Length: 461
View (cartoon, rainbow, N blue to C red):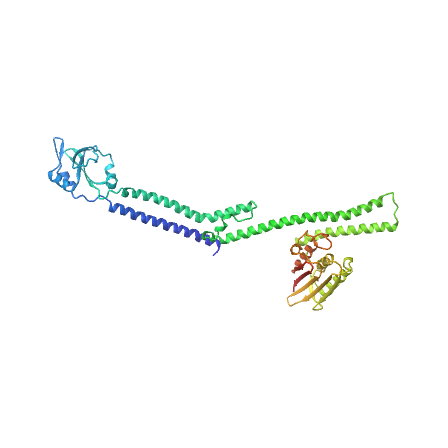
């Protein structure tokens, strides 16, 4: 189930359970109300209020009831009050001292509905006798004088409100906590803090599992941003080091050229033709070096942006690589080193761009030759299989550390453990890899200090 459907099911299920809980509370409330009102309503009076009203007489403005009614009241431990139209007591019989003599409007209703409030039960009757509006109030002690029954309903209503608040907070946390966690996480990322908030220890609970895909995506984004920042910082550091090295590399030939031009332009000296040609040759070499440096700049950026169309043409790789090895053996830096070439088949035809692939192989061979001492043996092997072509360059030189291997194809990186120090532009290996990738191939490096280095190129057939 995808994230959208899972979140929808999660919200609907929580709303469903919220409705179920509220329904249960409603049923319990109705049951309790019914219990209190059914079991604790005033009991039916054994005396008939209408019969008492018929037996009431008014003589000389005095109210009285029959002896039979009085006897019945006495036997049933009941009392009787007759109130006038203002709620004042006009007559009473067998009334306890604690019973009031005046009732405010609505007070009789309250005492009737909640008999436990004052500890007695009331029955009332209203009738007009001889133009007198009278109210009969008959009472008896309540069966239970426990005030709990009076306050129970009010307390339950309050408890329903409190429970409702807690349920709302609980479901609010269930629904909102993961989203707040995600918002906090995104906020930290926007501020450059590539870490998950501290709540991550709770991420395995149910409410976070619903957003598992989103959490995983954010975790991957966090790791990617963190890695990108590290790579960017490393690239900036490498670029600064590269700029320092390149400035030095450019400054050296420029200083040489400037020095020769200065002395050649001076009137104090008269140079022979051979000396002038020597100066010119030296300056030409320095100019060619700077031109090659500029070409490397252009080439690496063009390859990176795929701005150079690779022209693939079938060619015999055996003769092609043999020619490169023979040229390398004639280089001054490689005269004290041994080069060998072997193949498992001849010829081997493959579609390549000879110009750029030659540049890549020359960079790799030059790297093996330049950064190793004299008497180093360099082996080049060409092998064809059913699905690929392998070009392997092995040497038994000084090797490299794993840190250097990991960064060898980074632009601007110049190793520090080579025999020549950190000379070079730092672009040769990056250019070689980009050319191999442009041929849809792959290149890997394995190396161990004091054992040697192996460079393997794989081209798919």
